Amino acid sequence: MSATTRILSLCLLISLAAASLYGQGGAYGTILGTVTDNSGAVVANAGVEVTNTATNVTNHVQTTSSGDYTVPYLQPGTYRVTVQAAGFQKSITDGVTLVVAQQARVNVAMKPGAVSETIQVEASAVSLDQRPSTTEQVAVASRTQGFPFSILCNNNLLDLTTFTQRCNVIGNPYPSGFHKDINHWFNSAISYTTSPTDATDPTRSSCVAATLTGVAFCQPLNGQFGNSGRDILRGPGINNFDMGLGKDFKFTEKVSFQFRAEAFNVFNHHQYGFDPFTTTGIGAPVDDNPNDFSIINGVSTSTFGRIQAAHPGRIIQLGGKIVF
Image 1 (cartoon, rainbow, N blue to C red):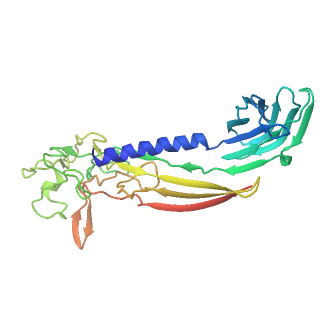
Image 2: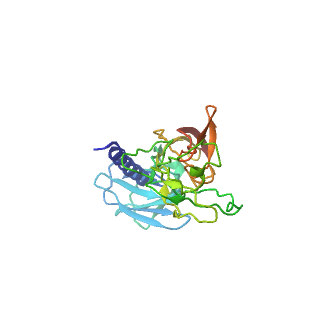
Image 3: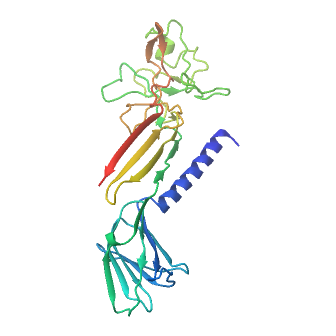
Protein backbone atom coordinates (compact mmCIF):
# COMPACT_ATOMS: atom_id res chain seq x y z
CA MET A 1 0.00 0.00 0.00
CA SER A 2 1.47 3.35 -1.03
CA ALA A 3 1.95 6.26 1.37
CA THR A 4 -0.75 8.25 -0.43
CA THR A 5 -3.24 5.39 -0.11
CA ARG A 6 -2.47 5.01 3.59
CA ILE A 7 -2.96 8.75 4.18
CA LEU A 8 -6.26 8.81 2.28
CA SER A 9 -7.48 5.73 4.18
CA LEU A 10 -6.57 7.36 7.50
CA CYS A 11 -8.34 10.52 6.41
CA LEU A 12 -11.50 8.55 5.59
CA LEU A 13 -11.48 6.85 8.99
CA ILE A 14 -10.97 10.18 10.76
CA SER A 15 -13.79 11.78 8.77
CA LEU A 16 -16.16 8.93 9.64
CA ALA A 17 -15.21 9.21 13.31
CA ALA A 18 -15.77 12.94 13.21
CA ALA A 19 -19.18 12.46 11.60
CA SER A 20 -20.08 9.95 14.31
CA LEU A 21 -19.00 12.32 17.06
CA TYR A 22 -20.92 15.15 15.49
CA GLY A 23 -24.03 13.01 15.19
CA GLN A 24 -23.77 11.99 18.85
CA GLY A 25 -22.98 15.42 20.23
CA GLY A 26 -22.45 18.18 17.73
CA ALA A 27 -25.12 20.89 17.80
CA TYR A 28 -27.62 18.80 19.80
CA GLY A 29 -28.33 17.84 23.40
CA THR A 30 -30.03 15.02 25.33
CA ILE A 31 -32.65 14.88 28.09
CA LEU A 32 -32.67 11.68 30.13
CA GLY A 33 -33.68 10.47 33.57
CA THR A 34 -35.27 7.84 35.79
CA VAL A 35 -38.92 7.61 36.87
CA THR A 36 -39.64 6.22 40.37
CA ASP A 37 -42.49 6.16 42.86
CA ASN A 38 -42.49 7.59 46.39
CA SER A 39 -40.72 4.52 47.76
CA GLY A 40 -37.94 4.76 45.19
CA ALA A 41 -39.08 1.78 43.14
CA VAL A 42 -38.72 2.28 39.39
CA VAL A 43 -41.79 2.83 37.23
CA ALA A 44 -41.60 0.88 33.95
CA ASN A 45 -43.54 1.66 30.76
CA ALA A 46 -44.40 5.19 31.88
CA GLY A 47 -45.18 7.57 29.03
CA VAL A 48 -42.69 10.45 28.73
CA GLU A 49 -43.22 13.53 26.55
CA VAL A 50 -40.40 16.03 26.01
CA THR A 51 -41.73 19.25 24.43
CA ASN A 52 -39.78 22.23 23.11
CA THR A 53 -41.77 25.13 24.56
CA ALA A 54 -40.72 27.48 21.75
CA THR A 55 -41.69 25.23 18.82
CA ASN A 56 -44.20 22.86 20.52
CA VAL A 57 -42.38 19.91 18.96
CA THR A 58 -42.88 16.86 21.19
CA ASN A 59 -40.88 13.64 21.43
CA HIS A 60 -42.66 10.57 22.88
CA VAL A 61 -40.83 7.72 24.61
CA GLN A 62 -41.51 5.11 27.33
CA THR A 63 -39.45 4.20 30.34
CA THR A 64 -37.59 0.91 30.21
CA SER A 65 -37.93 -1.95 32.66
CA SER A 66 -35.38 -0.13 34.81
CA GLY A 67 -37.44 3.09 34.76
CA ASP A 68 -35.00 4.97 32.54
CA TYR A 69 -35.75 7.14 29.49
CA THR A 70 -33.56 8.95 26.98
CA VAL A 71 -34.48 11.56 24.37
CA PRO A 72 -31.43 12.41 22.19
CA TYR A 73 -30.80 14.81 19.29
CA LEU A 74 -32.67 17.77 20.77
CA GLN A 75 -32.07 21.31 19.59
CA PRO A 76 -30.83 23.72 22.28
CA GLY A 77 -33.74 25.45 24.00
CA THR A 78 -36.21 25.23 26.88
CA TYR A 79 -38.23 22.03 27.36
CA ARG A 80 -41.16 20.64 29.34
CA VAL A 81 -41.03 17.03 30.53
CA THR A 82 -44.39 15.31 31.10
CA VAL A 83 -44.66 11.82 32.66
CA GLN A 84 -47.83 9.71 32.90
CA ALA A 85 -48.39 6.22 34.31
CA ALA A 86 -51.44 4.28 35.44
CA GLY A 87 -52.16 4.73 39.16
CA PHE A 88 -50.05 7.91 39.41
CA GLN A 89 -50.68 11.62 39.09
CA LYS A 90 -49.40 13.27 35.93
CA SER A 91 -46.03 14.97 36.51
CA ILE A 92 -45.00 18.08 34.54
CA THR A 93 -41.52 19.57 34.84
CA ASP A 94 -41.18 23.01 33.23
CA GLY A 95 -38.17 25.15 32.44
CA VAL A 96 -35.64 22.47 31.52
CA THR A 97 -32.88 24.41 29.72
CA LEU A 98 -30.75 22.50 27.24
CA VAL A 99 -27.55 23.83 25.65
CA VAL A 100 -25.31 22.45 22.91
CA ALA A 101 -23.75 19.03 23.64
CA GLN A 102 -25.41 18.84 27.09
CA GLN A 103 -26.98 15.85 28.80
CA ALA A 104 -29.69 17.19 31.12
CA ARG A 105 -30.91 14.59 33.62
CA VAL A 106 -34.50 15.06 34.82
CA ASN A 107 -35.44 12.42 37.43
CA VAL A 108 -39.13 12.25 38.29
CA ALA A 109 -40.73 10.86 41.50
CA MET A 110 -44.38 9.94 40.82
CA LYS A 111 -47.13 10.27 43.44
CA PRO A 112 -50.07 7.89 43.70
CA GLY A 113 -53.35 9.23 42.36
CA ALA A 114 -55.50 9.57 39.25
CA VAL A 115 -53.95 10.46 35.93
CA SER A 116 -56.33 13.43 35.75
CA GLU A 117 -54.47 14.96 38.73
CA THR A 118 -51.34 16.92 37.87
CA ILE A 119 -48.21 17.82 39.80
CA GLN A 120 -46.29 20.67 38.20
CA VAL A 121 -42.76 21.59 39.26
CA GLU A 122 -39.96 23.80 37.95
CA ALA A 123 -36.73 22.29 36.71
CA SER A 124 -34.78 23.86 39.58
CA ALA A 125 -36.70 21.67 42.01
CA VAL A 126 -35.67 18.38 40.40
CA SER A 127 -32.32 16.71 39.96
CA LEU A 128 -30.63 18.16 36.89
CA ASP A 129 -27.34 16.59 35.93
CA GLN A 130 -25.63 19.17 33.72
CA ARG A 131 -23.21 16.78 32.07
CA PRO A 132 -21.05 18.44 29.43
CA SER A 133 -19.78 16.32 26.60
CA THR A 134 -16.70 16.81 24.51
CA THR A 135 -17.32 18.12 21.02
CA GLU A 136 -14.59 16.98 18.69
CA GLN A 137 -14.34 17.98 15.07
CA VAL A 138 -11.72 16.43 12.88
CA ALA A 139 -11.86 18.03 9.46
CA VAL A 140 -10.87 18.07 6.45
CA ALA A 141 -8.66 16.64 3.74
CA SER A 142 -8.38 18.33 0.36
CA ARG A 143 -6.51 17.05 -2.65
CA THR A 144 -6.46 18.70 -6.08
CA GLN A 145 -4.63 17.80 -9.25
CA GLY A 146 -3.27 21.30 -9.78
CA PHE A 147 -4.51 24.43 -11.51
CA PRO A 148 -4.01 24.68 -15.29
CA PHE A 149 -1.92 27.39 -16.95
CA SER A 150 -0.78 28.47 -20.41
CA ILE A 151 2.70 29.08 -21.85
CA LEU A 152 3.17 32.71 -22.93
CA CYS A 153 5.78 34.50 -25.06
CA ASN A 154 6.14 38.27 -24.94
CA ASN A 155 6.55 39.53 -28.52
CA ASN A 156 7.68 43.14 -28.86
CA LEU A 157 5.30 43.84 -31.76
CA LEU A 158 2.31 42.09 -30.22
CA ASP A 159 2.78 42.64 -26.49
CA LEU A 160 0.04 45.14 -25.59
CA THR A 161 -1.32 46.04 -22.17
CA THR A 162 -4.30 43.74 -22.73
CA PHE A 163 -2.66 40.95 -24.78
CA THR A 164 0.17 38.50 -24.33
CA GLN A 165 1.26 36.17 -27.12
CA ARG A 166 1.30 32.41 -26.67
CA CYS A 167 4.32 30.29 -27.49
CA ASN A 168 4.72 27.72 -30.22
CA VAL A 169 4.85 24.06 -29.16
CA ILE A 170 7.75 22.31 -30.93
CA GLY A 171 8.50 19.45 -28.52
CA ASN A 172 7.24 17.37 -25.63
CA PRO A 173 6.88 19.31 -22.34
CA TYR A 174 7.36 15.97 -20.51
CA PRO A 175 9.88 13.93 -22.52
CA SER A 176 10.80 10.38 -21.60
CA GLY A 177 12.81 10.23 -18.38
CA PHE A 178 11.83 13.74 -17.29
CA HIS A 179 11.26 14.23 -13.54
CA LYS A 180 9.48 17.25 -12.13
CA ASP A 181 11.02 19.42 -9.44
CA ILE A 182 10.48 22.96 -8.21
CA ASN A 183 13.04 24.36 -10.66
CA HIS A 184 11.88 22.36 -13.69
CA TRP A 185 8.14 21.69 -13.57
CA PHE A 186 8.19 20.87 -17.28
CA ASN A 187 10.82 20.75 -20.05
CA SER A 188 11.96 24.36 -19.88
CA ALA A 189 15.18 23.97 -21.90
CA ILE A 190 16.02 26.98 -24.11
CA SER A 191 18.77 26.95 -26.75
CA TYR A 192 21.08 29.95 -27.18
CA THR A 193 23.88 30.80 -29.59
CA THR A 194 25.23 33.73 -27.57
CA SER A 195 24.04 34.52 -24.05
CA PRO A 196 20.82 33.84 -22.13
CA THR A 197 20.66 37.55 -21.32
CA ASP A 198 20.95 38.63 -24.95
CA ALA A 199 17.44 39.56 -26.13
CA THR A 200 18.67 39.58 -29.78
CA ASP A 201 19.77 35.95 -29.68
CA PRO A 202 18.00 34.43 -32.75
CA THR A 203 17.32 31.14 -31.01
CA ARG A 204 15.57 33.03 -28.26
CA SER A 205 13.50 35.24 -30.54
CA SER A 206 12.09 32.77 -33.06
CA CYS A 207 11.29 29.16 -33.85
CA VAL A 208 13.26 29.01 -37.08
CA ALA A 209 16.70 28.49 -35.57
CA ALA A 210 18.19 25.11 -36.41
CA THR A 211 19.70 24.75 -32.94
CA LEU A 212 16.33 24.39 -31.20
CA THR A 213 16.63 20.69 -30.37
CA GLY A 214 15.21 19.16 -27.21
CA VAL A 215 13.11 22.31 -26.68
CA ALA A 216 9.36 22.21 -26.01
CA PHE A 217 8.42 25.89 -26.52
CA CYS A 218 9.77 28.85 -28.45
CA GLN A 219 8.87 32.41 -29.47
CA PRO A 220 6.73 32.83 -32.65
CA LEU A 221 7.93 35.17 -35.34
CA ASN A 222 6.79 38.77 -35.19
CA GLY A 223 3.27 39.10 -36.50
CA GLN A 224 2.43 35.42 -35.96
CA PHE A 225 0.28 33.81 -33.30
CA GLY A 226 1.64 30.96 -31.23
CA ASN A 227 0.03 27.55 -31.63
CA SER A 228 0.01 26.43 -27.99
CA GLY A 229 -3.43 25.94 -26.53
CA ARG A 230 -4.87 27.48 -23.43
CA ASP A 231 -4.21 25.80 -20.06
CA ILE A 232 -2.24 22.95 -21.61
CA LEU A 233 -0.17 22.32 -18.44
CA ARG A 234 -1.08 21.84 -14.81
CA GLY A 235 0.67 23.32 -11.82
CA PRO A 236 1.48 21.59 -8.54
CA GLY A 237 -1.41 19.88 -6.81
CA ILE A 238 -2.60 20.47 -3.28
CA ASN A 239 -2.45 17.74 -0.65
CA ASN A 240 -3.74 19.40 2.49
CA PHE A 241 -5.06 18.22 5.85
CA ASP A 242 -6.69 20.54 8.41
CA MET A 243 -7.71 19.44 11.90
CA GLY A 244 -9.66 21.02 14.74
CA LEU A 245 -10.31 19.79 18.28
CA GLY A 246 -12.61 21.43 20.80
CA LYS A 247 -13.96 20.82 24.27
CA ASP A 248 -16.79 22.48 26.21
CA PHE A 249 -16.50 23.04 29.98
CA LYS A 250 -19.79 23.63 31.81
CA PHE A 251 -19.55 26.12 34.70
CA THR A 252 -23.21 26.78 35.46
CA GLU A 253 -26.52 26.00 33.79
CA LYS A 254 -26.10 28.94 31.41
CA VAL A 255 -22.37 29.62 31.36
CA SER A 256 -19.80 27.44 29.61
CA PHE A 257 -16.31 27.80 28.19
CA GLN A 258 -15.17 26.34 24.89
CA PHE A 259 -11.50 25.67 24.15
CA ARG A 260 -10.37 25.02 20.59
CA ALA A 261 -7.11 23.96 18.98
CA GLU A 262 -6.88 24.13 15.20
CA ALA A 263 -4.09 23.14 12.84
CA PHE A 264 -3.97 24.00 9.15
CA ASN A 265 -1.76 21.90 6.88
CA VAL A 266 -1.28 19.75 9.93
CA PHE A 267 1.26 17.40 8.26
CA ASN A 268 3.24 20.40 6.94
CA HIS A 269 3.13 19.25 3.32
CA HIS A 270 4.76 21.46 0.70
CA GLN A 271 2.00 23.35 -1.12
CA TYR A 272 3.54 25.02 -4.16
CA GLY A 273 2.05 27.49 -6.61
CA PHE A 274 -0.57 30.20 -6.52
CA ASP A 275 -4.16 29.42 -5.62
CA PRO A 276 -6.47 31.55 -7.80
CA PHE A 277 -9.22 31.33 -5.19
CA THR A 278 -7.17 33.16 -2.56
CA THR A 279 -5.24 36.42 -2.45
CA THR A 280 -1.92 34.56 -2.20
CA GLY A 281 -0.95 35.59 -5.72
CA ILE A 282 -2.11 36.32 -9.24
CA GLY A 283 -1.11 34.49 -12.40
CA ALA A 284 0.26 31.10 -13.32
CA PRO A 285 1.46 28.78 -10.52
CA VAL A 286 4.64 28.18 -12.54
CA ASP A 287 6.70 30.76 -14.47
CA ASP A 288 5.12 30.50 -17.91
CA ASN A 289 7.30 32.80 -20.05
CA PRO A 290 10.65 31.70 -21.57
CA ASN A 291 11.71 35.38 -21.70
CA ASP A 292 11.69 35.74 -17.91
CA PHE A 293 15.03 36.06 -16.07
CA SER A 294 16.00 36.82 -12.49
CA ILE A 295 19.27 37.40 -10.70
CA ILE A 296 19.92 34.22 -8.66
CA ASN A 297 23.14 34.13 -6.64
CA GLY A 298 24.44 37.05 -8.68
CA VAL A 299 23.81 35.32 -12.02
CA SER A 300 21.09 36.14 -14.54
CA THR A 301 19.11 32.90 -14.67
CA SER A 302 16.01 31.88 -16.59
CA THR A 303 13.04 31.36 -14.28
CA PHE A 304 11.00 29.68 -17.02
CA GLY A 305 9.41 26.52 -15.62
CA ARG A 306 10.18 27.32 -11.98
CA ILE A 307 7.63 27.23 -9.16
CA GLN A 308 6.90 30.85 -8.28
CA ALA A 309 5.47 30.64 -4.79
CA ALA A 310 4.40 28.39 -1.94
CA HIS A 311 1.53 28.41 0.48
CA PRO A 312 2.31 28.76 4.20
CA GLY A 313 3.50 25.76 6.16
CA ARG A 314 1.75 24.37 9.21
CA ILE A 315 -0.32 26.94 11.11
CA ILE A 316 -1.52 26.22 14.66
CA GLN A 317 -3.96 28.46 16.49
CA LEU A 318 -5.63 28.25 19.89
CA GLY A 319 -8.88 29.91 20.85
CA GLY A 320 -11.47 30.08 23.56
CA LYS A 321 -14.88 31.61 24.07
CA ILE A 322 -17.34 32.04 26.90
CA VAL A 323 -20.95 31.17 26.13
CA PHE A 324 -23.58 32.72 28.38
